[in-house]
Length: 276
Image (tube, rainbow, N blue to C red; front, side, top):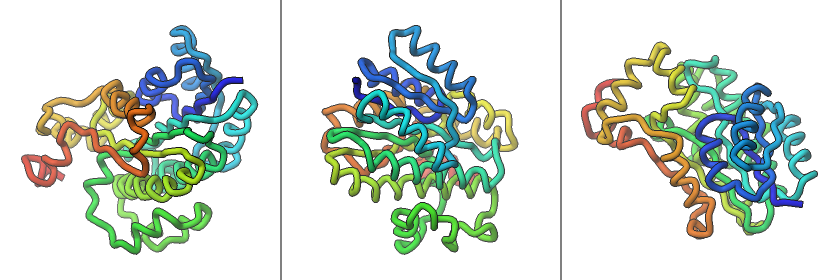
């Protein structure tokens, strides 16, 4: 039996992180599209990793529980990487909230119930959550602590209060960060840690969809006018994830790390301020 890593979302960021920290482990990679999971599994297997692909739907608690059950067959779950999600150009409002907000909340909750002592997780949020105006302390607490099956009853998530797919995405990512804080308390009772990372523009297939979508010019302008002057790479996100998931990060839990080349700084205090 090996320690097991669950990797949700067969994308470039998730795979980059898994390759940094998944050596010697059994890795279960799940994606909505089996072909994507198989592609990541093949790449990693050819690099010497022990990977099993499976089809899974992050918006379904039953699917999440099936993935956890499959993982437990091989050993104790000691690592979680959640890099799944839908972008504003990929899906309607309802789907974004069901996957990015609800699905992530359920995944953190269910893995938190079984994570091995000393285990660790990281979920990928987004810089986009930082650009939405601040919410009230009451709403923040609701997003952080409302039972998962009651989340869609919250007033702030009612259809009339979500203005666009971008707004839905920003709300989901804000919820991710708050949810990680609340879950860190529960994971801590098992001696485990959970953090989130909020990347900026990182060159991945999802980002390329955005570049070619209705907000493509906005995104291209964003990385051109951020202090770094360029988009990021999946491996730069993995640099931070590796710290968070290692013993060097043992005192870090319930935190979010903004890795965006300074785009958020420019959005509030620089040339991007009036661009959205």
